[in-house]
Length: 255
Image 1 (spheres, rainbow, N blue to C red):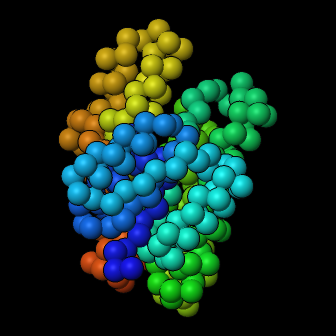
Image 2 (tube, rainbow, N blue to C red):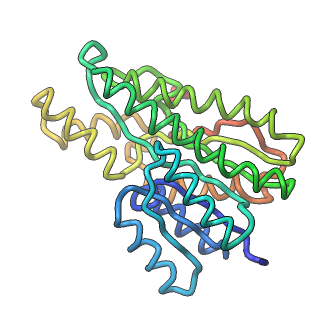
């Protein structure tokens, strides 16, 4: 098997779908995982342009589903070179109104999903003595945001996990890094803005404009502008980079 293999979670849309396209462009065999069946269309688009791409419906917070999907990848390819942990959910709610079930769901998907994918992919990477893991942090893991306490908490935990895991896996020549995007034009962010608009009574476009103003270039990122740095961290060009969190936030934290 000469092709490198990349597993990308949350592949049905947004940053995940953009990552599928970028890795396929660089001749990876790409396996997308998502709970949304639209991930199949993304895989078919790649395959239709001559790339190798498969899709599995998978809830990243369900251990059996994750284990089954990684087993299928292992059976077909016998290796995993890159894992992009992109799947996640956002919770926009005042802290004292968050229910215990909402708390657990956010933690289980955002942090638990990263844990499970790493757990089941690592046996392949350790056997190869090579591999790259790119976790999806967020600017919310660096700065406080009203009504985003649990989202920010899980993203901060992902960044901390990345740093520790990088040291633990260094003896196996496995690199672990994270990306922390600012505002990216995805269905998740637009849904976030819609909830804020309904809660505050402020028109959607006004809330959107305020969010755009948090970026130095006064605009949201296109998902491809995050996917390209993800690919770079997975590439040989970043061979000396591990344990890092890369802010791709258009200067938000620098302000």
